[in-house]
Image (cartoon, rainbow, N blue to C red; front, side, top):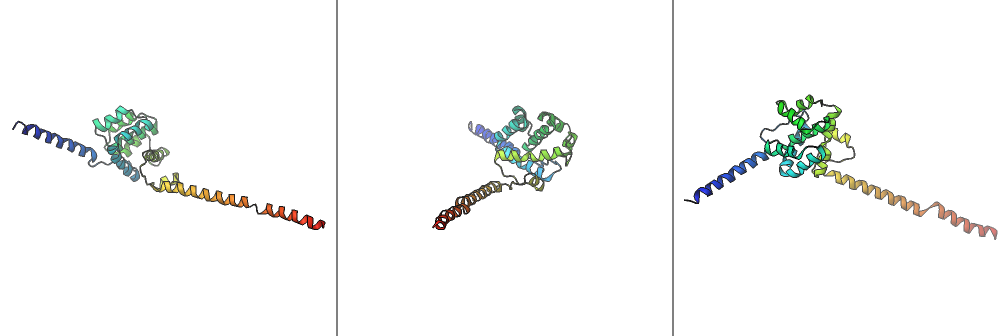
Length: 212
């Protein structure tokens, strides 16, 4: 009987821990409402990435978006923010030239209508150059993570030579292959020297014949 109670308590603690982990893995009814379907989709994808690869996610926010590591960790662990929300807050801060914490405070003050309204309050209007810069920022972040990303029509116009997701590497290899073919053809034509050998040959053989 003495061993039954500790064993039961251990089982309960494990169950509670698993429940917390499951809650972190799947934000319930999470909708960023940025006003752009593509951004909403990839902020959701960032949730999956940030939960599975927290250290890499935190490093990205610190190194490339200027967020204090303590703040990012507190938002993710202490306050239960979704990684997509953390990213978008820090990305908006970078665009408007404000610290990530400033955007976090603005979100906490009033977020009932989602990120689209919060961004407008901070001066980023839909369709503006700032908004497009905010959207384009996803691409280098995903590249640093080596994570596939599918560009929509708007982003493809900005990255015209870039393929979608895994096609990017193939496009580069095709380009290298084309360059190699062009060089080999040019070298071949130059080495043949069709005009020069013929002229040399005609001149040497023709002159002695004329002299005789």
